[in-house]
Amino acid sequence: MALKLLVNASLLVIPIGGSLGALFGIDAHRSATGQPPLFTGDGSDGNGGSTGGGGSTGGGSGDSGHTVNNGVTNSMYCQNSYGISPPSDGQLYTLNPNQWGVTSSSEGALCMNITTNNNETYPSKYTAPQFSVTWQYKPGPETQPVHAFPNIMVDGVLPVELGKMSSLNLDLHWTYGVGNTPAETTIESELTAQTLNANVAVDMFFDSDQTIAQNSTTAKYEVMIWFANYGTSTDPIGSQVTSRELNGTSFELYAGTNKATGQNVFTWKATEPTERFVGDIYQLITDLYSLPGDLYPSSEDYLGIFSFGSEAFYSDANVTFWVPELGIDIEKS
Image (cartoon, rainbow, N blue to C red; front, side):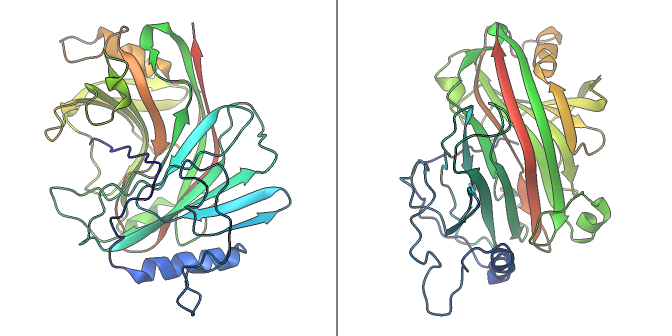
């Protein structure tokens, strides 16, 4: 399914629909972590004099409040779409709540928490800020089941010609849990009990034109890597064409066409949820070159977008997607 990476520099005016219950649950999480409340009782919006999230592409005024403790800043963003680009002395990233499928009739809400180091340094030059996303939505229409793709996107190094890459190293740890706080480990039975429908995915876009490759709607190819998928609504587009093992994880490749955009979509889906992955995923790109037919990308195409996040379909209860560790290193030959 095409993922609309609406990394806008300003707040979209589409309102979050309906469910105050989700936000009240998120409010409890804010209180537990020392953040200002979303609901103050005096009709305010919870900003409480905050100066906003420093370094955001929206001018630093788009967060719903932040706290600073021991050189670390925690900020929350509940907008439909808002690009947050924390300053760093290493690899740059842009994060986005990206509720691209939310409409005025949608019921539910989502908030993204981002933890940044005030000294702008991280364990390695490729380490991303830690983030979590708490959300709950009721099922959307069959024609548009996805409400959001909260994600983190590589910034400043793309586009790059696929054949001129030498490796694409991913260092990843994520969890999904029921409730308003991050879970130490994912317990699938608890997610199933709440009818969670979501995936955990890398999302990339390719095209022979390097400018078009940077547009998630018009790029010719979408290539995804699913590290988990939950629920009956969360299935890859197309049919299975091959499989392979990479660094201890078994993947099945699905190929098909997104009818809404006309894009060729290729999804490497892990056969079992993989919370921890360290390895070079460039091989999952180069494998596509050798497949028969003219629907597949070539080494002369460009990688224009690389992001990681979770497609949020629906859930009966608040759930929290947490990414405590992430590093992305795109090496050029």
